[in-house]
Length: 380
Image (tube, rainbow, N blue to C red; front, side, top):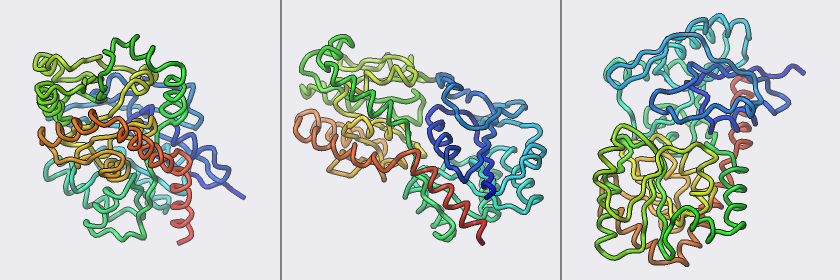
């Protein structure tokens, strides 16, 4: 039997996507080809490429990049030609914001094959690009045969836009559990006390970890306000912020005595910090999904995240594995963190619940959902 050919176009080879694509390519009934628009995203210069781990057919399309008004646009060349040569049975695009995604629509129509949009936007975190991008969104939605979403917040967003639930497949976002699950557990088992000492963590402190870009939408300024309240109240919470970005200098200058910055770290360097942490926090104002929540849940950490993060609606069991809090509310953030810092028993139970929630978010589950959607669309 001929394998189903799937072409997938996405912006960059983000390291957290590799396990997903590997799992899809490993299915005996699927032949996968991934076309990346660029090797790197200028907003994420710390992302390292791991070509030795990429066990699927892929290439970076030639083209040129332009950054204007906060938007990053890649003008790719040869998209239609490459797709026509591959002759996929289904074409998947990572949105409607790049010219290559529209070229893929042209190729899908020429081949008379279904086009599927991989959508992570939510009603709470719809990133507006002005009238032109809004019109593009509606035009692409009208032309897609199906949709892939990472969780229920993105699904509800599409349904609210008028998309039939029968055209939507939940393909859960996932990270490499051998790293954020197994490697973190091994680091803890090897001696967590010694690890924390090597990292310079004071004995008796409750380490609150935050990982992400230090840009306005990430809400680190709100987190610093919450940390100041905790310090003034005598809490044992000590905040560790991993990441770099446009506000790094300003945030470092505003940070209190209970805050530490590490700078940006690559994937493997995060492992000891997840092993040493007691709580994870994502204070974002804007966050379509938030892959760091997958990492933190796999590591077995209690999570505090704002309602803006799509992942918070799938990976945070409010009151059981952590807390979902309003966007921009430093008082609510401080209250949630203070409660976790003061109750080690709850932290342990919440961490176990986080790990259980992450168990369904695997690369294999993502791949199975994509393959199932392809089969259904082609059967129609």
